[in-house]
Length: 633
Ligand code: ATP
Ligand code: MG
Image 1: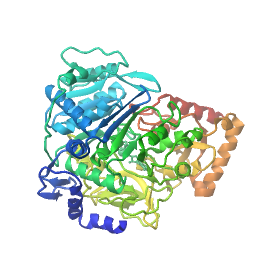
Image 2: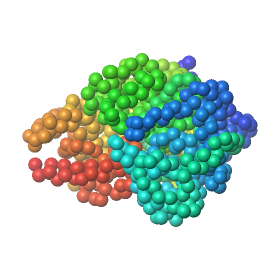
Image 3: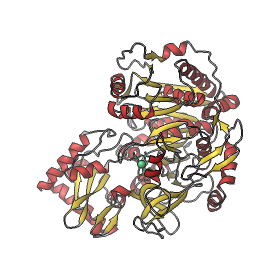
Image 4: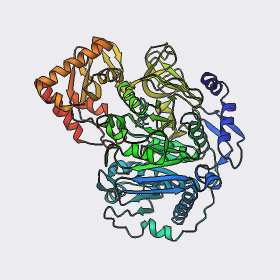
């Protein structure tokens, strides 16, 4: 099929288009109206239809292919590996649902899931979906105050958690964080359900805390019927990563989400029932919701849930999983691939990877160097896809399941069906021409699967996302990009990160992309720093591929010069950073996104801001040191 026609149909006749797509899932009762957009920007999909995410992910396949693998939980932290067939998964989910019901959880109640990457976390999500409870998964190991603010916002009746997670072989106890968070919060849950992995000490609070294994044992034969949900009832709340500020509670529906996932599994991820999907993300992030738990299962695929590092016990671990489970489609993040690129290549060459058909990468800009490197290793299409927690599935990509359009290095691709993507000039609001930079926006209605609202705050949804331009109501992604003459988009950074150097608007991404092409650059962050003369100047922080080459002041100065020359040649002297500093690591969120705003704050002598989402606080000190030492030279 021709993708341009497919896309055009989704935009010209969205109701017919999505009505057709809705046949990919099971409906208990069909909808009476495909789209209700009478109160923009709110969009209701499949109004009046009833369905259930758990039924579509589990029961449907338990009935037709019950013995096939559904969930494969692998932990290189605890050296455990367990595969559940669809039938077994359904039984576990029903047990978990019965346990939740015994604790008073019902339709519309919120359940906060603060869990490591273990099978029980998926059981809990699916159990919520089954009984119509609204889950809110919070990344395991988040600090007490981040957890407390999410408890306050979601007001859960139940929290599901565990004694701890594990990272790099070291146990990370959760219970004291959880207790502290509940103490801090003003919306204390009545019950806390705990999975004891025997990793860390765990004292149960009498009357509140209950042990999962004990309650499960009392519900071994439980049969919990599916609660049929009206398509627009909420299925879950998920807070954004918090890269740019206070996380927003993204609320998602049931029916629209199920349909969007089913169609993206077909057209984007080309997954077939019986095959294995491996997304290396975490259930705490949107990729984990859409493409570890719900998406692959809705498509009847086995899904791998991996707890562990990408390089432990050795850098071949992911590829050994691909070989062993004949993974056909793999989903990861550019950050992870950059980590692997620093390892000796023998590890990935040891395995038979012939089952793998494509690698999908999302979450951060995919630079050309990284994309080319992994392509040269794998020889399968490397498919960048651009989206947000808010949208739940890709906005820009290449839907190889429709047409085998070529990918273009540095570009996530073209607008996905259903998304009316536009680029608008930030100051005039006019549509940008080819190769002209602007804000990436989406004209309403947002397609199925996207956020319904900000949980509990419709006004914040309108004010945050739909009010960037005064003369037209469009959804702003807050990303900055351009489209080339062939319609391929390029994401140039977040709108907050745009640098204004002597009147020239530059996306941090453009400069980063150019710097990464230097052979000794493994990773780079570029930020705009206030400058009396030019307004702003770009400053670059580089992780060297070979640190030995930048161990002396002379070496650093020489490589800085080389990097200047690269940028001058590729982008022109206006884009040349004022300084290049070499650092051992860069500050990132727990989801692997660069915290450019914190780096910028340090450079400008301000406080780095809210750091609850940061992965390693020591990285900020390293930035500070690099700047101080660098300025002495
Ligand atoms: P917050 O909104 O709380 O600041 P966040 O935006 O980091 O957090 P996510 O929803 O996880 O939270 O991330 C979405 C953002 O990640 C996008 O808006 C974009 O900036 C970036 N992104 C995701 N995928 C890509 C990609 N393929 N290429 C470039 N950037 C991407
Ligand atoms: Mg965001």
